[in-house]
Length: 473
Image (cartoon, rainbow, N blue to C red; front, side, top):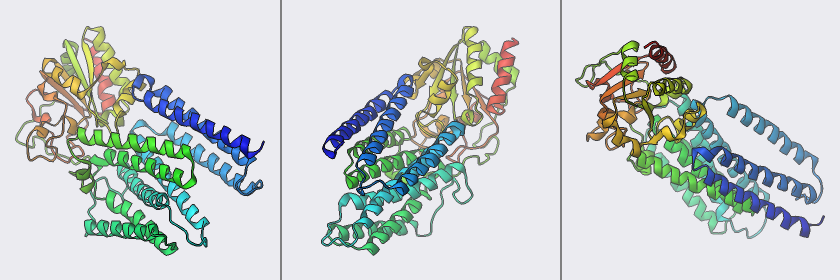
């Protein structure tokens, strides 16, 4: 089969794969169709990879079959694909943001390496006009690579990358100088100069920029940063597509870049902050700082398992507010079992889902869907907030900053952040292991509300005891 025959066939298959990406992304807009959307997008990628492999076999770039090149490709597929499959199947949902960040790093780094390889490949070609896409690919991909590694380390709580903001001496000046080096180098290359040292300087500046940009941002803002870096990854992949003249990379990268940018904006809006404000520096300290009991002038009222069970069992309506504590404890099945027990007693149960609950958008939805919680019971913040004042009991499980009434008061680190109106419910039960603070590093005024009863327990264990107590009534 000659080039005139195989080339249009492969390009048509690439186009079909790109269409599958678009349709898959559309189906991911709803939890009910998200799984099929993921499979459709994966099928499109498998199709395009298969067509590319056939193309390389029939029309090898070097003019002849290169066994060494194929060994490297297959080794990469086996090692990378094997690790990706293993990590995706074994890591708990609470670790998904870290995994997504690592995937961002891999994608950005790979895109940058493609551009660097293309730049090195044309060494010695006279009158080289540096392609804008090549430099942008190197810059964006390198920033994404190091920035995503730092973000993943912050979410993991590694000692070298603590979740708290790490201020670098003269950090803003250093970051500004790095940006200036990258811009000046890019302009120099855009002018038609070919200089390996300048490209190396741009690469080094971009790699360091990713570190200095991400380190000062606090753990509370990492989901937004990861989403932004995901957008960067897509943009870098699109630039790699321009470098290689590959429409599949251009389309796939543009989709990821655009969707990541939209998601970043939506998350920032949910926190009532601008993306620029988040990048300049995150608020608060690290998760888990211990607050003093009764801090802020109020008194904490502790409630027993039996008292909490009675409140829930004899309520007419209950709103469950899941948070990161529920995800850490893997308590989604326990909360569904409790909800079923309450529904059997005629209680109306709903779930209030904050846009940034957990550590990434959709985190709570996926966890609860895994436990077969009916989709109609999952209510977004705008829909559920008016119902709190008509609700008998709000059951908060591990959610902290997203329920803090301090957000309504000026001068607080979370001021202006949209929250769930849990304090408007007639009675409030909070399941929490301790009086630890959230990522914002401040006391939650909800805990000293006279209507609030604190049930100090691990989320999974506490819910299991509540199920037993409700059954015994």
